[in-house]
Image 1 (cartoon, rainbow, N blue to C red):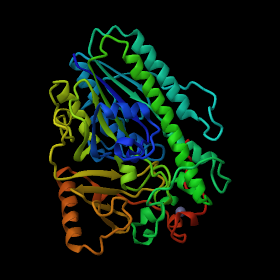
Image 2 (cartoon, protein in one colour):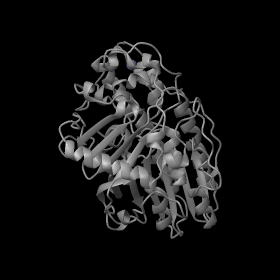
Image 3 (cartoon, helix red, strand yellow):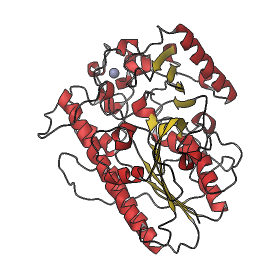
Image 4 (cartoon, rainbow, N blue to C red):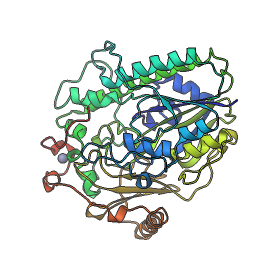
Length: 459
Ligand code: ZN
């Protein structure tokens, strides 16, 4: 019997974890998984936004193919039907107990999983500096339901269980609570990232220059001091530590079941978090490393390798990789690559490139973008004003300088590579529409110069 437990967190940045180089650790339980497992060095979210990322993950399809491009609201999506592959369905057909706890936001792609309800259990704040909101309340409900299931399940069928936690996403509510200028709390604050200062903004694409104009959380940071951004990082680490504690409880509970010696754990995230890089918070619009690159970790019984598996991959690879590990036949139409060699050899398959895409959060501003990485070269293209960016990640891992203008030959190569990907995967990118009101493209460059509220809050 091979059992699988998948932890998905919401907004977990790879740089926040010790295995990916964080000097401080707020995640002892995730660290333990990493110590007994292997982490993909550079895994990318297919579309760094909650719903598109999840729909891509569970359907194994690029967002441009399954057309779950937004979180909904002003840009509603059509839920995926039976013609799309579904990970839960494949496990269910193979005789597994396929269960899902927590955040769905899947565009219909969780078909096949028995999903628990999405409810909230209100709990008191533990630290007044870091108030809980509905995200943590939902996670508490998810934790309790998961623990109940673990202690009552008969274990007569192999298990494929997803625990979809929302934290550290509670950080979005933290920004709302602390919008505008305010006194930072007393106490030690963590350092700012190496790319906090952003002196290259004039050299970036229009949607990046005006990130504050399409992202309400960014607009709420107007007036923040350096210490306010450090306070943001402290809060982020705190909400992450809450998720880690819940993960620890679930693993402890699984240690008391008949399957305890045959569980393979996978941990990943739907997208990252800016964590004050370029003076920005949460995620949206940009395709930089902080937002689009995510943890992708394998641990437990099937995992023989340790450390970091060098190279690039996509979390779209989860679907074919899990099927391969479970000896289940791969259905037609999956866009990911089987990277199951990561658990035996500790390596990733060679691949020419990996991609990620952006469309819109809620449809208020629409500014489609694409990212393609080949080796250590990363190319970003936005439709709006034909924005192009190029980064040499070996020399500039923090993407401090867009070197598109200085590298014409490489730029042309990467442009051609993106064009070929667009053609071979039927990506409608070049025929998409940009929708950006001029008034949200008019203030002096710099997020701190933003005025006004651009879109309803994502609560
Ligand atoms: Zn703005």
